[in-house]
Picture 1 (spheres, helix red, strand yellow):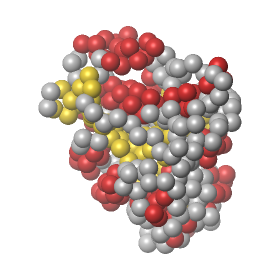
Picture 2: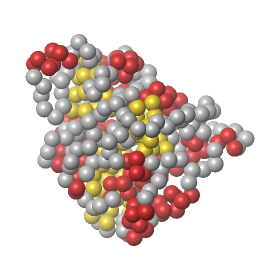
Picture 3: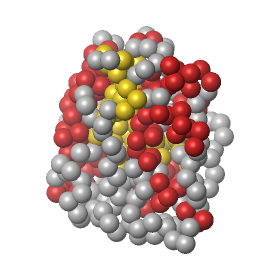
Picture 4: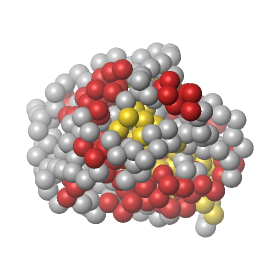
Length: 344
């Protein structure tokens, strides 16, 4: 874990690597019914262009930038070297970002240029996406195991629950997306994976209705936030910041409540060294992760965005997950808590 200043702690993203620790088995225990109410060819994806809607999960079939259409998204995750990226290059175009997330990858910007010798050594091993102006600037990662938070694993320790009860904070969603992204990256004033170019790409994804932010407020002061992208039944969490103790974990718990109650299956934490196991992060295999993306590719969950007190999360945590879907006569026909729980 990077030793960042406390006021800029980022629990989601660290340099990717193969994971360690317990792996959560059997995440896909039941084939879900067809969720036909909100199809990928519907207009449910608010703000999404036809090019974005044409991109299928784990298919790599996307209209637009040549890197978004590349067949390398199908196979590169199988050959990712230990401690290194699966793919190099591509572009900051939002079509490329969305294609990456739909196929189980996330981006990292190189913190410093590599030498020509290292560049020549890496290219025979790591594929380069087409249309790459500088293949060594942008890298794409798909670790063999992925830390995720599920509804049945989410939890909070005593001090975090005390913070939820006593802090008086409130939360919103998408109220200040740009402010959250900039505090997670460009405004840090230090080397970070989230460059100015990548931040602008996330703003475009937000305008498409793909990327979302959660904000935690103490009155009118923004004390924490997190952002990521909704891809089918997965929230791909990218980064977070805080200016108060425990505020980043409050933001992530609040995010979990909103997106999981809207039908999201899991919140992807991307790196297993971020300390989020204390709020329920567990490891799953990349094959299971990609299978969830495939099965839920047509889902269009719409999390609520209104202002809410974070104290409500204490009751949500105590209530636990809903009854399993196989306790009911049939799986619901639309994405929701029961449909999501059937997959985990």
